[in-house]
Every structure is written in C-alpha cells, then in structure tokens.
Image (tube, rainbow, N blue to C red):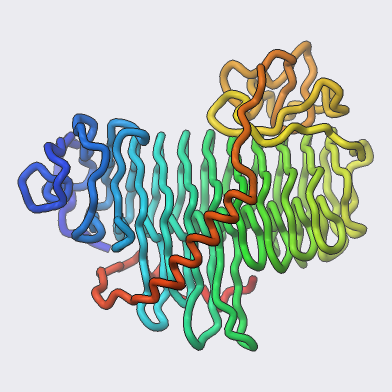
Length: 468
C-alpha cells in the first residue's frame, strides 16, 4: 500500500517536537506535527509538562510506513482516547514505535457485521513498544480482535498491556473475541507484563460464540517471550492467558492467575500443528473451566519440550489440572516439576511430582512480578540452565545460577530478597472485568462515522470463521 507522505530520496529522519497539549490544528499540537511528518521521523513529546493529551477529535491516523512517538515517560504522559475512538490507526507497511508513553482509554465499535479490532492501536505492520503502557482499551464487534492492540508483529520491551477487553457482540449473529489484550501474527516480548485483560462475548444460542485468549492471541507465526509475566487474564471459553499458532519459545517467564470460565487452557492453550518450548518458567494458580488449568494441548498439537519448568498449583474442572492433552502426546526435556498431568501426556522420566512451595505473585525485584520459592522448596538446585542465561526472570542483579546450580522455574532463590510486595489477585481483576462489561453493555451505541482502515481491516476481516 502506497501512503501519502513517503520519505523523499535522501531524507534524513527528523525529530519533530510537540509544543502544546491541545488536540487541535495549532502548529505545534500533536495532531498537526503528525500531519507534518514523513516516514522515518520521530514525534517528540518529551518536553511537554502536561500529564494528559485528550484526543477529543478521534484517532490519530498515521499515513506513514515508519514513525516513532516518544514521550517523557509512561508515568508522565498519557494519550487518552476518552472512550470515543481508538487512539492510533497505522495502515502502513513498516514500523510504528511507541516509547516512554501511555496509551489509554481507546475504544473501537464496529458497525453492523463488521469486525472490531485494536481498541487503542491498530496496525497491519509492526508495533514496537519500549517502556510503554497500553491500558483500558475496548474493541467491540461481531468479531473482536485485540482489545488493546492488533498488529502484524508485536515487539515489547519493558512494557505493559493491561485492563483491556475484546468483546464479541451482535444482537443476532454468532460472535468471536480473540485476544483481550493483543492479537498479533508474531511476537518478540521481553521484560513485559500482559495482565488483567479479557475476551468476552454474547451468547446467541444455538449459534456459536468463541472467546479465546484473554491476554494474548498469537496467530500463524508464533514467536519468543522472555522475562515476562502474563497474569490475571480471563476468557469465557478458551485460553485465559494466551494461545498461539506457530512455534512459541517461552523462557524465564511466569503465567499466573489466568482463567477460563467454560473450556480448556487456563494459562496456555497450544493449538493444532503447534509446539512450545518452555524453559525456566513458572506456570501456577491458573484455572480452566474444563481441562488443562495450566497448559492445554488440543487435538493435533505437536510434541513439545519443557526444561526446568514448574507447572503446579493450577486447577481444572476435568482431567489433568496442571497440564493436559486431548490426545496422546510426548513432552521431551528434563529437570521439571509437574504435579497433576493428564493421562495422555508422557513427561520426562526425571519430572518431580511434589509441592514446589511457591509464594504468592509479588514484586520480588526486576521489571515483572514473580512467584518466589521458599527456603524449603524442593525446586531449589534441582533445575537446569539449558540456554546459559545469566539471570532469572528478574534480570540484571538476579543470577540464574547460585553456587553453580539453577532452581526449577522462573525465580532463583538467594535467601536475601527481602519481603515481597503483594499484587492484586484474580478476584480484584474479576471486579474490573465485570465493571468493564457492564459499561460496555450499557453503552450500546454504534459509531456511524468510520475511518479508512485500509490494510489493517484486511488483517482482521474474516477471522470469525476460524477454528477455535
């Protein structure tokens, strides 16, 4: 797709400063500076002294392949959609980068039988988040894809996606909601948090409704997630935390407190023709309405690998509460701790089956929350470090191995971390999700104005017919 303002030949990327906090056509406003930019430029908001730019005129449509929005810090400046519209629409083929900035309170309502996607940010290309927060967003439609984010590829570093909802809603049709936090065709995520998001929908029985992946839906291309926490997300049907197509590598991470109401995969759901490599990771306190409270492998999922990973303390209404499979499946690897596997799984012979003695999810240092091990945990010094990582999930200052040995899971016990700081559990996030849902149901308005969504709409259109 050819956009309106490509960079001219020999163009050197510029830094364009935003000089005021108004949402108008004044020369130094954000909206005006975006209109002046060409592909490759950076929009710099770091000198602004206001805390919020309220986008009362609707979404910023970025008709450029490559653009960076740079703020003064995610705790210092918010681009606020005020629940009127999504915040960023990028139909380009390059990279949209958001750094040191919060994007919040975006909302996109599809019209009639159209799909709703990217409640705060929608791009058919690559979205890069650096030290950024995207929160409290909503996408609504007969098919809703990415309550906060829809992207061709999602890269996150030291960033958060939270409190957002994909809502599959229609008065008479079957509905779908994929990715309450984000829907992307591939990911590379490190030192980040995806928390408190939900995939919900209306049930027009006997028509189908598919609510899948409260936190993150990775389509087609899989990806890599490291030193990241995915917590307290919710889906009515499948995959409370995340699900993926294509091989997923999950390392030095935590999946905790996610849930489904009706079906499988409370923490992670591994889809057909898909495998996972999970290393030095803790998966606990997740719940499934049917099977696989921690991890569920569906029919035709591929053999996968666990190394030095804890899958324990999860719950399910049927089958193996920690990890389950719909068909016989072999798991390779070593040095794991799994308490309650399903009958169809063949785990490595050295897998421990004991209580790991985990403490609640808390701030134990580093960029993300973790479950600490106690001094009497059987996971101490029983793990491995297959990738030779220098740190545990918490990053610099928290070695992966102490005295030449690694613990099982995402957290390395060192005996001197100090008292942890507790974080909200599922009950608190459930209250937030309920309030969000009631607000959505109370605001049944449908915006009749539309934005030319171009290639972004093509990324989402037609997905309601996909297999769950």
